[in-house]
Length: 245
Length: 245
Image (cartoon, rainbow over all chains, first blue to last red; front, side, top):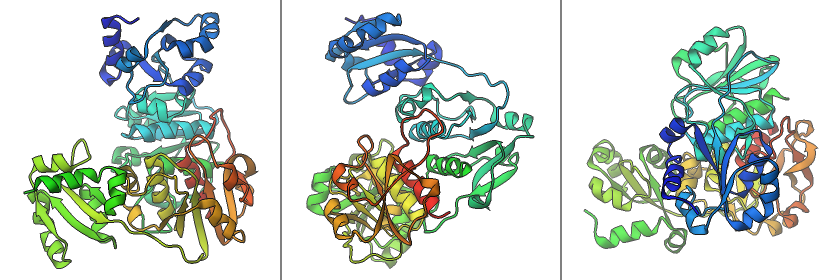
C-alpha cells in the first residue's frame, strides 16, 4: 500500500529535474528488473505486484533489497508506461568519474538529443566492449526512462561521463579522435589506434565546430544510395563494428 | 478552412485500419514534405499554414498538387504530432510488386514490430543501396507515421514488399540467404554473394523457425562485452556495412 507522498515522489521522478534533485531514477518492467538485479546499481526500493514478488522475494531478502507489494491500480499510478509490467524500482544515480584512458575504444557524444539513440548507442557500446562514453553536458540525460529502456540494461554497466566535452578533448589531444562526418575519409580504409575516441554529433546538426576542430580524423561511411544521412546510433554502431574488423 | 468530415477523415488515417481501407497515409512536417515533394509518391492533398504555402505555392501549382490553407488550430486537430510543424500531406499508398531479383543486396524482415526500427532499417537500406525489402505480413505497416518519420524519407524511395515470407524464400532457394542469429558464423569472415538476402528477425524472439530453416547461412556479429543482443536495426545496418567492405 502506497501513501500519497510516496506516489507523488515516484511520479516526480519521471521528470529529469526531480531525478537530478533526488539523485534517483526509475527502472520498469520484468526484463529490465532482471538486468538491474544482476547489476551493481544501488537499488533503493522495489514496488511490485504479488505475482512478481512471489518469484523474487527470496532473492530480495537475501540481498537486503527493500520492497513493497502494490496493487495493479497503484502500479498504474506510479508507472510511466502505457501498459505497466508488474514491477518498478527506484535506483540511486551512479556518477562515474573519469580517471585515465585504458587501451580500447571510447565514444564521445556531442549533443545527442534522442533518448532512443542514446540508449541504442550505450547498448552497442557494451556489445563492442567500449571502455566509456563521454557526453557533452547538453546530451539527453542517461537516466531518462527511454534511454534506460532502449539500452536494454547496458546503461547499468557502461561508464557514461557527462563533462565539458571540448575542454576534455583539448586536455587529451594525444588520444586519436575519429569524427563521424558527411564528407570525410572512407571509414573502410581507416585503421583505428589501440586507444581511440569515436565522436558522434547531434542528430540534425552533426558535430559542433568547437568539437570538430579538435578531432584528428574525419571519417565517413560511404553512401551507396540517395539517403541524406544515417541514424546517429546506426553510424556509431557501424563505426564500432568496423573498428573491430 | 476544413469541414468536420475532412477533419474526421484525416484523423482516422492515424490508425492503420483506416489507412488500409482508404489506401492513404499521412506525411507531416517541413523536412519530410521536402523529401515527399522530390519523390514519386502520389500526393493527394496538402494542408498547410500560410507561412509554408507562400514558399511552396508556385511549385504546387506547377505540379498540379491540390492544397488547402489551414489555421494553426486546424493543424493541431488533424496532426498526430505533439508539436505539429506547418504542413500535413495525404498520400496514396504505393504497392510494390516484386518481379525478379537484380544483382545486389536485399533484406528480409521477419515480424519486425517496432516502427522506429522499421524506419531506421529502410533508411540504412537506402544508404547502402539495398534493392528491396521483403517483409513478413505481420511486420509493422510501412505507412505507420513513426516508420515514415524515422525513415527520413527513404520510405518514399526504397521498394518494400509485404508477402508470405516463408513461401517466398522457398520459391527462391537459389538466392543466398544470410540469417542474423546469436550463435552463427562470424560475420567478419563471411563474404556476401552478388545477389544476397540478409534476414533479420523479431526484436525479442529473433527469426522464427520456419524462416530460419530456409536460410543457407547463419551469421553473427561477435560480442566483445556483456550485452545480450544488439538492436535489430543496428544489426541489420552493421551487416549491410560489412557486406560492402
